[in-house]
Length: 119
Image (tube, rainbow, N blue to C red; front, side):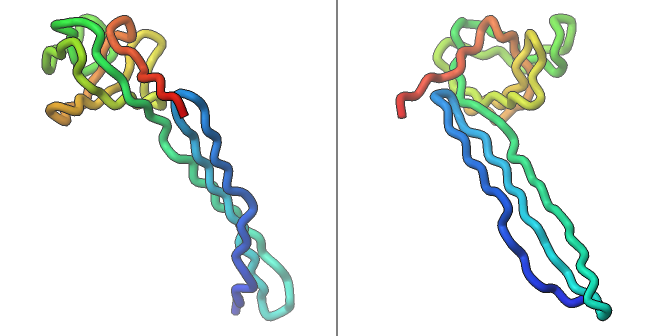
């Protein structure tokens, strides 16, 4: 029979930059069995990395896949706000969610600007 001895926080790292934040949570769980042997387990849970962005041209294609031959889902226009999913973006396309409609897809990095916030 195992008895939980304790749950201690090993690390909670919150890194801020001018353009966004990244969070990582790690914890350690220590359990004691009937022979006083200890078992240690680790939990690590990274948080997805995203940024706010703005469309910088009119008629920007929001595509189903990150390539220029993919199906066009919608057209976006200058000044529209998007949420950029940096974890799923490629070298040339951002994975985005269009704030106006909630549609998710890909747009060329040439036409999306990451918002710069002063903190």
